[in-house]
Length: 115
Image (cartoon, rainbow, N blue to C red):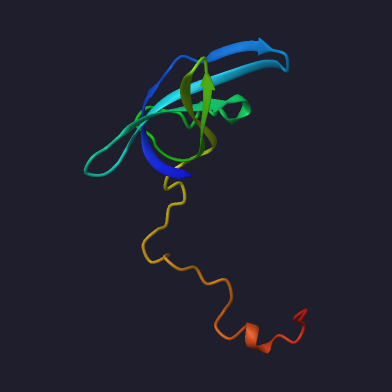
């Protein structure tokens, strides 16, 4: 799944050590856009944590998975990010909406195509 949301708050970085070695986890609070904005807590694990992108107020494009698990008769749901990018990081200047990679008619004269 994917969403675009504004970073509202960074929760404290959590670290520890487990059977697979050291780990770190950063929880962030984001708010969706729209008429009825929603706040979500999203977990970022390990090397996916990029402090330079995680600035309050930044608009982020977040790819994530939702996972639920049962423990002692209660269900817990995690939202885990697997890719985070600055939303709109590719800026387009006016008049550059469609970029042409070949001059007009250049491909029509090519005889060395592999097919």
